[in-house]
Amino acid sequence: LRRLRVTILCIVPALARALLAELDAFSTPDELDSGRLLPDLRLCYCGGAALPREVLWGLIAHGFPVVEGYGATECTGLISANPLRMRQPGTVGRIYPSCRVRIASDGEIQVSGGNVMSGYWQDPAATQAVMTVDGWFCTGDLGTLSDDGYVTVYGRKKSLLLLENGKKIFPEELEEQLEQLPAVTEALAYTEENRLCVLVFSTDIPAAKQSL
Image (cartoon, rainbow, N blue to C red; front, top):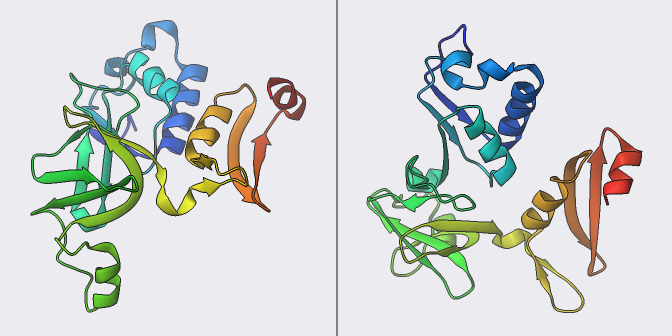
């Protein structure tokens, strides 16, 4: 990255986590500044999934100008982004001026505006499936919208887990919490016969069992 003089870096949370691990392992105390590590970097954009807070703050501690964003191809890219000077960790940022966002009765995030597509090419059935009668695009994501325009995404509507006791679980939230435990590299939450199951990946099984 330094050799290529990267100015804008676009990554997903998995790469952000790997990047932070490399920085923690190989950076010297006097290099904990992106001005030294990547002198040309102006912006590090992260999207595609929720960025764990400890990864966000870790990159910020290294001096990386991280911006979390949320978007969809059907919305011509970005829907919201966290301003560097008005960041609200845990959210995917503030709604872009070209967008309008509302939360449906079932918690789904819906978007309207000039940036939203008119429909899928030659596929009216698919278009009808994701557009409301009043022209709002249904993202398929569940979330909330604050009074000051910040969006929080909890998970995908289709991945919501319903347990036999009637409780609803967002697998992404549970997986993020598990992945913060020592020695846990990845976690996968799912249901089997209406019971909650979790699959944990680790490079140190004894340590992972102890932390669980």
